Image (cartoon, rainbow, N blue to C red):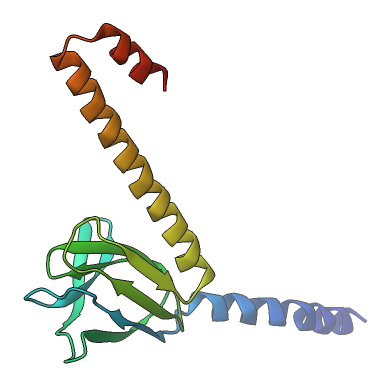
Length: 164
């Protein structure tokens, strides 16, 4: 009876142990990032991975004749990556296993327009980045208005700006 109990106990925990061992292995899978640059500049499109000590270059490519690019690679786990277009426009992306991301950019302006699609994470990140850009533009406009009111010594305008 005791041997039978040990046998059933092993049968119960054996699958759990196998699952944990499988989870600890980091199987690498491929990703693809591709897109089009509206206004290309001289240079390359560079992909860098965010590490604890900053961004580390992973790969770079030159544009094709039709201003498109494709970067492919393998990763063992999802992470944050930066696509740097000609040292002018930089876009943060989240890459996961098997992702096929499409990223179209202006390419000639640090705050230029861009469009991302391909995964839920990327689409959520795009929304956050657009909100951030909008907030930065509003903050810059407020700062400019406030500086102009200060220069003109217009206290009422300064108070109105502060109340916004």
